[in-house]
Every structure is written in structure tokens, then in C-alpha cells.
Length: 225
Image 1: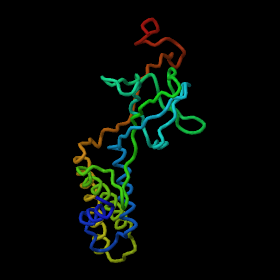
Image 2 (image 1 turned 120 degrees about the vertical axis):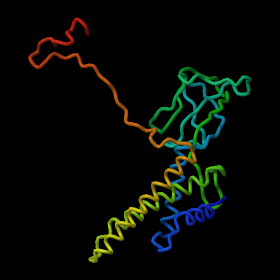
Image 3 (image 1 turned 90 degrees about the horizontal axis):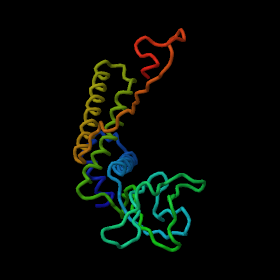
Image 4 (image 1 turned 180 degrees about the vertical axis):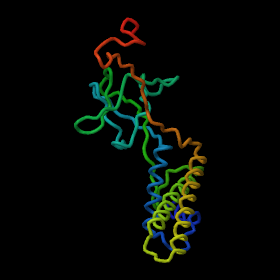
């Protein structure tokens, strides 16, 4: 399925009979939806890299700085059961020239290490890396973006001097906002994602301080801390 098929899917979902959405806006929304989908369901690929004998490994040629994540390192390659380096034996760190793989030890010069890592998805006129089962989800997210834009368009339209028109615009804005929420809900449901999975982090800290007079506290004195 090429880009034109996604364009058709989005057009069918949005049904912009008033012609408020221009073709560039629709295509940008599809591009943003592919980026979001790549964050939720990244593409996983493998590439062999050669060790140089140091405590570093070169990044795979397809690595995307800031967009890829290292999943595993297989070494030696070809063993059964598959031999993976322990996760605490390597990591990706930011270096002067960009991301780099750092090792806790050394691997002999010329030895191949199989890196498994993630990439974003590609969608254009000739390439589509989104699985068949998730293509509707991408179209749904793009449609949600466009519905948000229409909701903003009508909610911000304050030029009308006729009260009835103003009420109608507010009603349209609410309708488009509701459709945007509906499309996003369908997107999360299609991928089996809990939209509330990202919650604010918190920590509980015990501050063993004296009271405002510089004295020991009555309810939890120092001898019990």
C-alpha cells in the first residue's frame, strides 16, 4: 500500500465536504501519524558491525541518531541457543560525534556483532513499512490531527457578527473535537495501547530536618531516623 492509498483512507474518514483541508495539510498529517506510529510500534531491524578491538562498537549504518534504540547485541553470531551480551555490558551513549556503542569489555578485532535496533517507519510513493494490520490505525491518527485543526479553525472564528452563526461555529468546533477524540481512541484500541500509560513520575523523600526552632522533632526524633 503506497502513500496514495493512505490519502484515500484519510479522505474517506475525514469527509471534508467543505474543502477546508488542503492536500498539503492532509499529507503533513499522514507524515505526523507515521512518526507517532513509529514511536508506538517501531520498526525492528538487524545489522552486523565489526569490532575494532576497543571498548567501542561502530553504530549500524542504518542507525538514526535520536530515533533509534539498541535492543540487543548478539555475540558470537550463529550459536544456539543464541548468545547475547548482557544488557549491563553495553550501552548507547552520546559522544562528540553523535551516538556510540560503549562496551564494558573488549571484543577481538574483526569479530562481527549482530545489533538489533529500532527505526522509524517509512511511507512514501514507493515504500511502506507499516504492517497491513496497522495501516488503518495510521490513517485514524492522521484523521484525528486534521479534526483537531478543523476544531481550532471553527473555535477561533470570531469574525461573524451574527449570533446564530457564532453558535453554529462553536457547535462545529465541538463536533470536530469529538471526532478527533474518537479517532484517537480507535487508534489506541487498534494497537492495544493504553493512552494513560505515560504518567508523571514522583518520588517520596524523607527530609530529616530540624524544626523551625532548630530543635529535634516531637513525632520523629533523630534517634528513630
